[in-house]
Length: 120
Image 1 (cartoon, one colour):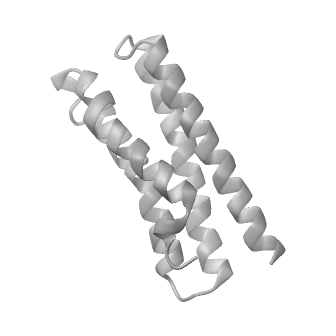
Image 2 (cartoon, one colour; image 1 turned 120 degrees about the vertical axis):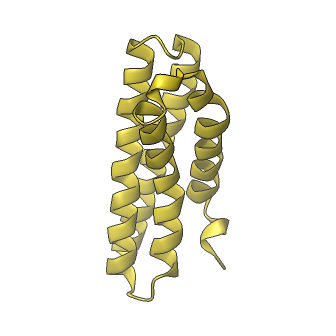
């Protein structure tokens, strides 16, 4: 691996963050601009950003793990926000299901990556 960009979890989380910006956040009403819209944008972008930052740091595996743990936390945050958007009627079941399953997969990928770092 030459770069964090080579990681499948980075690529997937980056594409999902774009989806939150380009599709999901546009379904929210203007009065949520500083609430749920802002929160889901920040949480979704936090995942690829933390992956990138963790791999850019020179602190070794321990430092990388810290950032991957933050990415995992942001992933769980997005899952909760997606539930809130569905339960508030802002997104439909189909979009919720698609996005939620993708974020569950990203979470599993992050967990696997953290385990591989720990085992090395």
